[in-house]
Length: 225
Image (cartoon, rainbow, N blue to C red; front, side, top):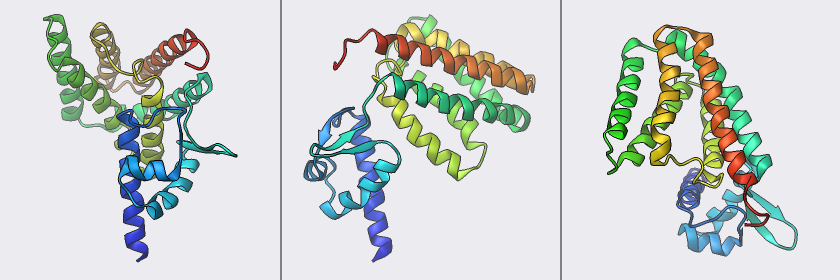
């Protein structure tokens, strides 16, 4: 019985995060438990079991007399989410530089060069989706190489928050594909040299640029929009 409850809770979590990333649930939105039942397609019992986990992860907050509020995107969230990335990925990249196989690094480099070539050739069909997948592959490779379940889970929750940060500023657009891929190449080239300090610094600069881009866009939005 306990195992079945756990499975339902995990399924409810997966459904909630999928709907959140699909923007069926919006940042800052107030929802009731019964609305979450409708949105996720999960039973009320599973939703009730799910809420403490979402609160602990900062994805939902209980507001007295108003209900459940989905994580609200503001400058504080942006700073906190990117600071978390900076601390985790800088050290993880240094370890990756020392330990990753030559073939893994070569595969990452090839994927990035292929995206740059397609972008410079003016290709548009599926370029954005493939570039985002390539972008994520580098960061996930660095994190997964740690083989640390605690860090991986925390990173996943933070990644969801990063995706919520206006989504459009964390989504690669055509004019950003080549610059972002070249930022990644600076990391990868340091990895090839087994330059742990250089790779960590290049990753830190890449994350800070993404943070500043998000802060600039968020700061230009009128309040409550």
